[in-house]
Amino acid sequence: MDIKLSVIIPVYNAGKYLNCCIHHLQKQTLKDIEFLFIIDKPTDGSDKVVKDFAMNDPRFVVIENEQNLHIGICRNKGIELSKGKYIAFCDHDDYMDPSMYADLITIAEKCDADIVVSPSIIEYENMRKKGQKIEYFNNSSDRFYFLERLVGKKNYDAPGQEYLWENGNMWNKIFKKEIINKNNIRFVDTKSCCYEDVLFQYRCFFNAENISTTSIPYYHHILFGNNTSLNPNYASSVNTLNFLRCLYNLLKEESIDDSYNKRFKSTLIRYINYSTISILHKNLSLRDFFRTLNMIKEDNEMRSLFLSTDLSDVLKTKSRIRYSRNIVFYYILRFLLS
Image (cartoon, rainbow, N blue to C red; front, side):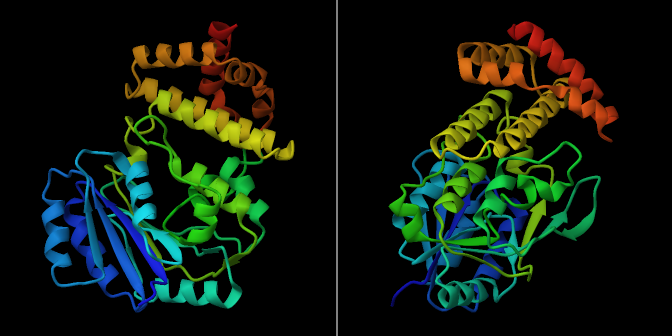
């Protein structure tokens, strides 16, 4: 049987959400499908849960890591071992509608698409923000629409959909495997770099010739306090700086238009914002801060980018109050780097 779609699911301490995720994967109406579970040395028994389900479902492929590799390298292992023409990525604590993969494959085959995109439903649990929302979605098939928003907002007052959160998700898309392998696209090691999904997708969208979309939301992303993206170790200042460096290098390699520079500098300001909040909340130690400072000093390009980012425009926007403490922090940083 030819596999149309390989779904890659890294598993690490998924807890109570794993059963729900697996049940919804089993309900998928697409027949020619495989599910690759990359077991990343969990300590909560998640590996046993996956193995028990796999005993009764031939579509389940279980790959166990000998050591904890983190999500980026786990996804790379899944790509290498996948047999499908298309590849999808699923988080171990999310779920999706039964027809999701069948519908996306139908669109992909009809349009010979390299990437198919759909909106997601974000569900909030165990957080101050409750309920759910359907993310903003623009039914654009222009790859530059996605590339711009993976880089950053066009200005400081732009709404959330202008940035990667609602455009940089892995789980609401399927990718033609040929595009990934032909261009040697892989995830960075998330032990030393965060936002690996943005870097991966940037290269995918840049090399895609045909992008299709659907306005139907299928995928439910559960957002709660223990999500990887909310973990201060994952998005440490060092890892974030490495991400910014990787993204900037991609922009240089692809000789992207200068209009992307403003979006990138907007992302740089978001980093300053994150660092300020992290220090105030004691998620970022002064030792980590000065380590990052030294990294910037040793990297002439990143140092020049920091020093050339003019925040005076922010004072003219509606966000000036929200960004005021970050501007103070930025000029302190600028002074230390000078």
